[in-house]
Image 1 (cartoon, helix red, strand yellow):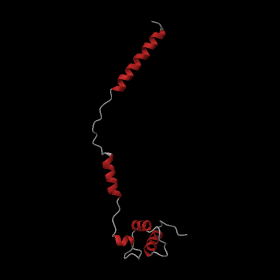
Image 2 (tube, helix red, strand yellow):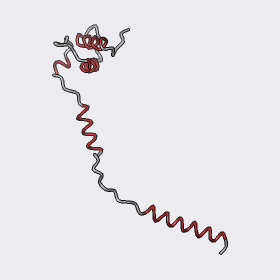
Image 3 (tube, rainbow, N blue to C red):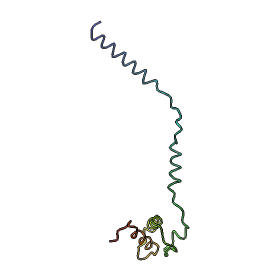
Length: 106
């Protein structure tokens, strides 16, 4: 056999062995990890905000108690179309966020 024949035979043997190794893959065993669907359900459950009474959330009157910072953020989002001068609830939320340093007044 010449050198090229030995080289060609070696390359064919390496290719065949690679094919065998690539075709024999280990089976997927259950790992006990959480599925994507379960993670999505948990994220949805954790991200749901505490519910406020419907009339209080949609009311434009001043709140009956001081707002916490998360409530103030939520109120600002719920009253996007309102102005601070016209909506007492948004004005109260705005004041809380300014005092907390979350909004910088102009």
